[in-house]
Image 1 (cartoon, rainbow, N blue to C red):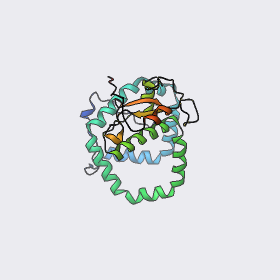
Image 2: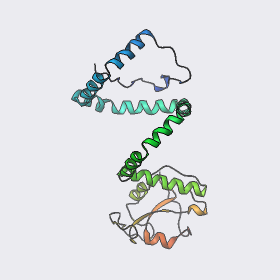
Image 3: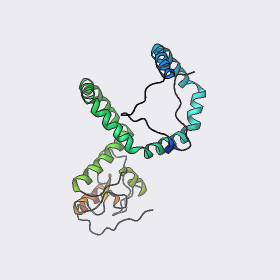
Image 4: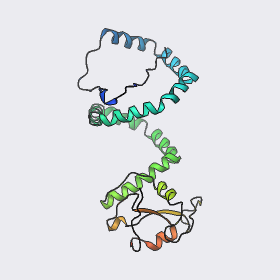
Length: 222
């Protein structure tokens, strides 16, 4: 016994019923005994769980069932999206003051962690996505959720106007050959933030083009 419950492995996640915060059933005698046992042996169970997660048997289980558990979780969240949103709303409303106090107490710590995270590859991807979505929202146009790097890789880091190979390895982002994400039809002219309306340009061509949108056609990709 590891003290760590295994994830549900239902064949159909839609049949799994989420717990509604406002409709909790009274605990059974067995559930009460289990809760008391876990509280009494909390440290022992935590230690046992850590050892279990380090074991080769557990690592092999995680590796073997990763795809199945991922598919289940995705299907479950899609099937219960509205219920989960209501649960979150009720929870935040009930713990608003508590969450605010926690944030104030750990504000500096969280800010330091965020700075470190935003320097990682995933953190930089989040920033790029957020920047594009923010620009589209300010222009009031449609926006897809994608990483600008996807477009640069799709175009092979080749400038779609001059045909030169851009240099993403340059530390100076102001270099004429540094790759830029360009909106073929500019957002300021009603263009949308989608993969079809974006392309790779070198910084030099991107500056020359500006927000004219002249001479370009939407790229058609499957």
